Image 1 (cartoon, rainbow, N blue to C red):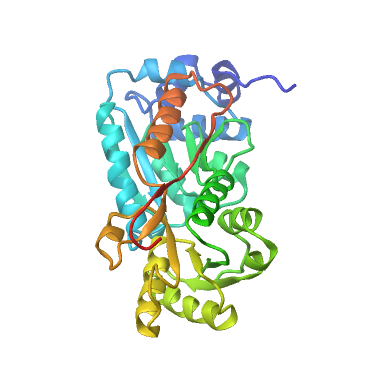
Image 2: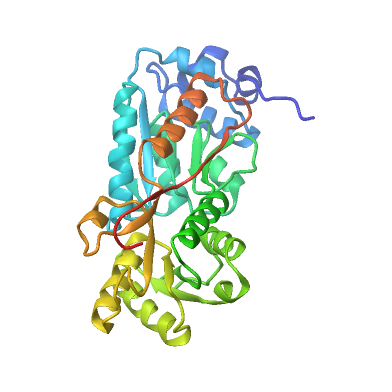
Length: 330
C-alpha cells in the first residue's frame, strides 16, 4: 500500500519549512504568492490529502460554508432541493453558496468552489471519479444521484429499485394492469438508460417493460412530456398507468391527456417523479414519487457533517428511498 504523503514530504520537495506549507495550505498571510503557488503545485503533484480533522481544527473559528452545484435553475426540482438543503444547512449553522453547471465547465467549477468552501455537494455528470477528486483537491466532495466507488469520494444515491417496486405494487392494488414509462434523455446527448428506467423494467411485467418512450427533454421538459405521452398512447393504446421520469414530464403528459380527452385517473393513472410542490396545483393534482423533502437533504447534511469532522472514514455511501406522494392523478 502506498505511504500517505505528509506535510514534511511537501516541505522537503518544495524546499520550504513545515510552517510555510501550513500557511500556504490554509491561505494564511506572511507568505509570497510565488511560494504559495510552488507549495500548492508540489502538493497536487504528490497527491497530498490532508487530515480533515486537522484542517477543521486549523480553521475552527471560521464559518462553515457548503458549496452546492446543480444542473440548472431552469428546472424547479433544483430550486426546491436548494431550498430544502438551505434549511438543513441553516439548522447546523452553515452557510451555503450555490452554483450551476451553466456557470462554467464542471471540473473548473468544482476546482474554484473547493478553494472557497469547506465541502462541495452536487449532481456531477463527469464519469471520471479521479478527475472529480483532483478538481476538489482536499475539500470533501459529495456526489448526489450516484453511488461513488473511489476512496474519499462520498455519495448519496437514490434507491429507485425499492421505490419503483413499492410504487408498482401499490398501483396494482389500486387496479393498474398495463404500465408505460416516459423516460428522459438530455437534449442532444447520447442516450443511456437511466437508473429510473432500469428500476421500472425490474418492477413491471415484460409487456409493460417494452412500453417505454424516450423524451428528449431540455430542463423545461413539459413539451417533451406532452409529445412523449402522444407517442406512448399511439404505440401502446392499452396502457392504463403512466410513470414519468420527472414531474415536469408528467405535467406535459397530463396536458396531452386533456387534449386527447383521456380522463386522468379514470382511464389512465399518471405518476411523476420528484415531489414538486407545483404538482399540487395541476388538475388533477399530480401523484409523485417524491425525492424532495427532509429525508434526502438530511442524509446529505449528515454525510457532509461526517466528512467535515473527519468521522466519515474513507467514504460515506448513503442511499435514500423516494416515497410516494399520493394525489388525485393516481
